Length: 108
Length: 121
Image: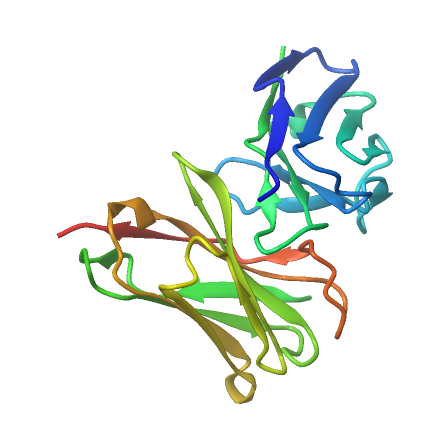
């Protein structure tokens, strides 16, 4: 099973600043990685797939990069609406599909 | 607009079988892959398994001996059965869709709102 490790656990960023979230896979996952945003009481929302492709309707301030075992989600100019927990998920080697433990983004 | 809605008992007794249904509206169940994913405070997001419209299934090896997913295209829904539940199976259960018809994409574009299932006597 591929273990996904996200860091930091919590990120506190001021509005308008950049937020950089990291996700590391225990084994090679190519570019088969997705990012999701989850707000309290809601289901996860797909942001990025294939490591860097934005899903439909996702603002351009969200971008993904990386391949292999190291990935990054960047929110270029943080807005208050971006306060949420962000999860990465690999789909290169399965079963099982696996998710990271999440990074909570807080607004300073 | 595709919408998914989970339904089923919110409370299940230990050793019983947890049964949930996910009903699709605004789209067709045909051709797609449909999954169950759960979320508990202790284990985060955990993939349970998926079923294709054709009936093919894949399950998480950690749950494989207890889980079964089925599909009823005539009712536009699919279902989860998880046997011999314990308190460790207490979680919010989500159903979700992979975006590509007849191709396993591996990620999820539509999710249900989730339903909390508590295992307790």
